Image (cartoon, rainbow, N blue to C red; front, side, top):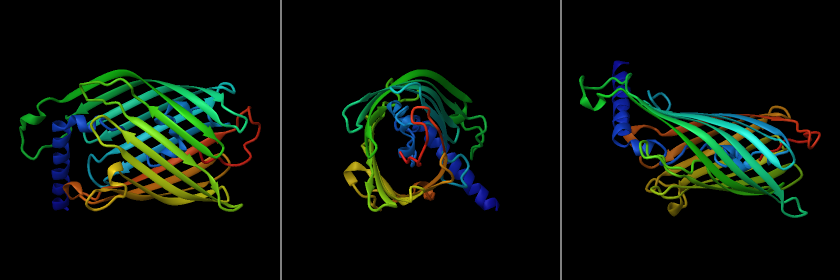
Length: 318
């Protein structure tokens, strides 16, 4: 048991070392992307808010490197609704922690929606206003060598105001959007601008089975483009399951040499207004520090009736 504890402490110390020396890599060169992003795009694209005919509340928890002290963990909450047929408003917040580093943000989201043609194709234009607290707390770190000067300072905090923007083109069977959740860049924690492009669709295979592919691209100035591809089947408009993989765009498919992630998404509607989702991802290739880099994500989503459509006749999956 003591050997296991010492190994964990060693890994945590090494992880903390990397946090200090490479703070810019951990503080938002690349923002957190949830595996089940397609169910709630509001976190990365404010134009999504109000695109549905109902009020939506989503809660997510994303965990990596289980059983390791200081492992990455992220929580998010969002709620969005219509103020009118053309105006949507929402609130979103997330908390991202890895070791002694923490990133907390809350945002107000606005969107204006336009009808583009008679086939129910619409365009949403969104704006996000946010406050963001980045912090580094070294007070609880135990080093391998006592009196390590690297950890002489105890904490560092920075509060920033920011804004984001995006567009969302959608119909009952298709969507395409682009979001920039934080446009302003800051130097202290090296917050960089992240660009997201998201698209997906719906294809009826039979009366009870639907195919729903989803694709996401994520890009920053200093990191190559990453893409996430999901293809899942929906049964009787209540259950869904399918594979998911994530890799650098230049590598196309994850591999041991190039790295990347393979995983799966599954979920069920517990009622017409409540759904439960789960996502798993496992790393391919190099395992940093000998740690098995897997992630688990849980989602709860509530959908409340809207006065603009009267009755929520069937569950919506995006």
